[in-house]
Image 1: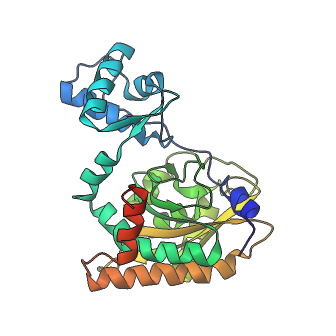
Image 2: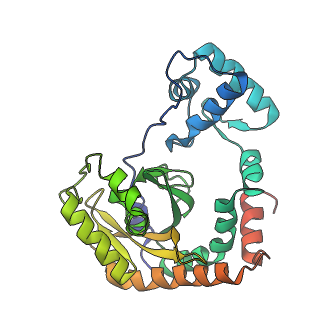
Length: 292
């Protein structure tokens, strides 16, 4: 198992590239009361996790006065939490409401025991991701250090072509999704980032053939990531399991075997349609909710 310092170094991976919230309502347009509250909650989709009032105001396209009033109301309802520094974050109440009806979070519940096993075996950062528009979004992220603030935390977003999970999801996406993605320039973060269309298309074909992806030093030179697809009942891929590794200390192809094994186990359990939660998932959720 790698030293803790190595795992901490790996956590710097993907701490860039989070996309700003794209408002569907032009600035200055009149919005209903519900629309303003939804804009406020949607501001937290920028991937930062916690924000000040001014940051919420900017991302939600609301005045500071309106933001202050709405934040106070949502805080009293229990939808937000505030820390000693004045930063706000979504509360567990929001997560509980979402988990009751969101298929993605139900998928997380099924995958979590397998992600925990992979995390314990390797000591590396492990995540579960889906495609959200033209971004990869993280449903879960198990890390060695809880003070991590990068974009690949739960709820964070990154561009598809710079992460292994994103490449997997892009490789198995419909052709029209790829066409839409390629209408925008492929931003380069390091000399290793794929930033041209022919190379990206070749990479996606190789991913479909091998059923895993490696993004070696795509975001920063210190680390890379590896991912594998979770196959749905109908053979489609809407989810990927990923792992972050230290570039000069790990062989990503050897890690790929473990990631593929985990993804296959999750796929098999999904196929069996087992609705009962694994006891390890229940224990994990209870501990993180402070119930035990």
